[in-house]
Image (cartoon, rainbow, N blue to C red):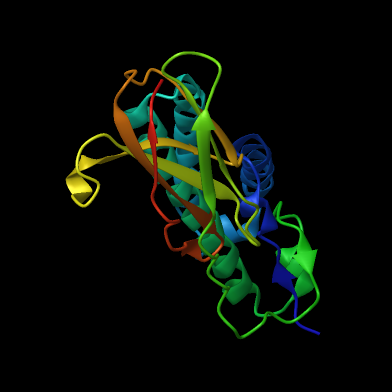
Length: 209
């Protein structure tokens, strides 16, 4: 029976994914794969772990640029650990003994040949919050979604250049603050699953109070 490595931790939050990533990094340090076809893997994984930890901590202030940087590094983190798992599987060629002690969890079921399903478009709702210049936005639960992006536009919503990423997070509810009272704002959202980003929600407009 063939054996494969589980990468479901890549759909988890940053703290959970980072903890598993560090376990894999520690276990691989003494694994024969990294002294053969996986040479250089430890440096790559160690670097992306450190950069994601820094970016994740920095993004907590909700600064748009830091949130965007964190999202880009998280994608790189996922790709690095996914590629490492596939490299280990190819090297092991179904040999369980070669996959053990890699830090990854092992599964004994064949991989599905079908590609992962792309997540659907979320439904976005927006309402005024209690504090002046703030709004409460929420997306519905979407099957397979692990990350939710919220974008805001103050100018013409038909121009893509006017849209800015407000936040990227694993939670469906957003608290939008520091809006100018009396101004019209447009909002839209999307989700990311294991196969990448899905389609946009419908655009919702609201005048800030």
